[in-house]
Amino acid sequence: MLATAFTLNDELIQLEGQDKLSYLHGQITQDVNLVTPERFKWAGHCSPKGKLWGVFRLFKHLESYFLLGSPAEIAASLRELKKYGVFAKVEIHHPEFAITGLITQDQATVSHLLGFEFAQDATCFHNEQGDALLRLDATRLILIQHEKRTLPEQIVYQEDNASWYRASHLAGEPRLGSSGVDEYVPQMVNLQALDGISFKKGCYTGQETVARMRYLGKNKRAMYIATGKLTHLPTELDLEMALEDNWRRANSPIDFSFDPKSGEFSALIVLPNDATLDTVLRFKSVPERQLKLHALPYSLEDPQ
Picture: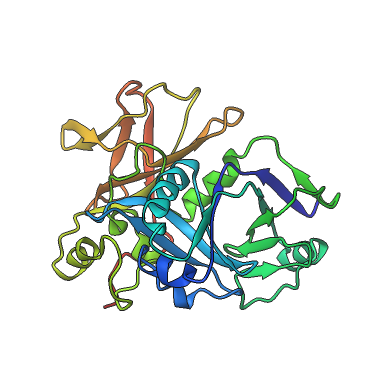
């Protein structure tokens, strides 16, 4: 087996038309001019109050811009983008492409099998069939197929996608479920650490709040990675955090995965940004089940 494949429940927004760049540029935290066919970028889409509708991988493909995110993020951002898109020469779609996660130790060979020309300095590839391939890191790829086709036999599907999303969590990649939409400013989910915020691009929706968080030091929260072992997934995911001899309410996960076979649970949780790795979390409904925090794979320090 050369690679493991996972069917993902992520979705897409597609923008095309004469004003697609200028319109999108005025809506999201990223400088759209930096997005090329060879490089995808992280981006946030905020409300006027600076709260995130969604966090996306933004890429250019088939002469269009695409936003890749969770179903909850796509639903919220699609609604908002269409609301204001009527004032620009832009067409906004919700295409039903097949989205597959791939984990492999040999990305070059897998890419060639799928018809892509692999290059180490690129993070986005395109083939003659109209597919796109995003390279997230040294072992993870996302295949986006215009029409779903059978994969080469060296690539084997895994029935459950929990291990894919666990890998994403351990990489510190923000993803909002329905409870996290319109709740957090971009810095609270570490978007600046993924180079997903441009502080030089000019105006966009929610910019004043995002800038205030940076320049006035107003942000007091950050996203953390938590894992644990469970016998079953609790019906309620409300968490509590140990504080000296007491427990206080913590936020519910903004995203999580659970593998019922192994019992592995992973989650992304927004906590006070002075939380340390020895902070203990537990489920309010199942207090004997505790979670531990992991070190983030990037720095939250502002390079200024």
